[in-house]
Image 1 (cartoon, rainbow, N blue to C red):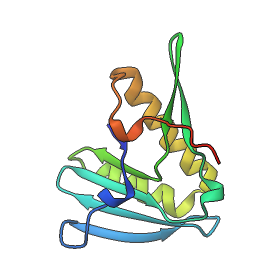
Image 2: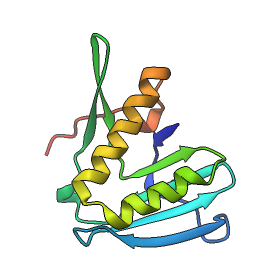
Image 3: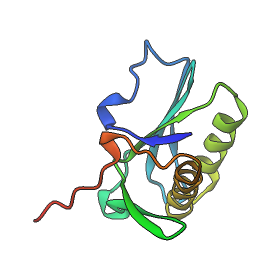
Image 4: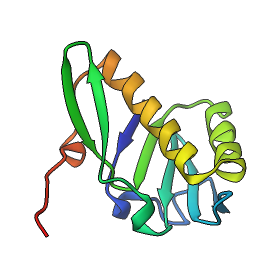
Length: 125
């Protein structure tokens, strides 16, 4: 299960089992940190290349999930962590965002509850 979380929730070095800084094929920086119950992914690239939300459709309903730029993936398995590291290394920024959106879509289709940090609030400029 993947959740959009605040960037401040990204684990410090002492809480992470393993951490890496990876540049995608567009040369944008991402961080990934493995913890006991899963892993975090954080985008450190140009905010211009990060949409404010993910559009999620669940049957007849439609919702926007906030794209905080930081995500927690809850899984005790190592393989999803390794696969995500590979995506960050070999993927283009748009492909990575698309992959994250697909994981969120899959999660919402199983459990439509969203966390407070995922509520999309349109901020006027």
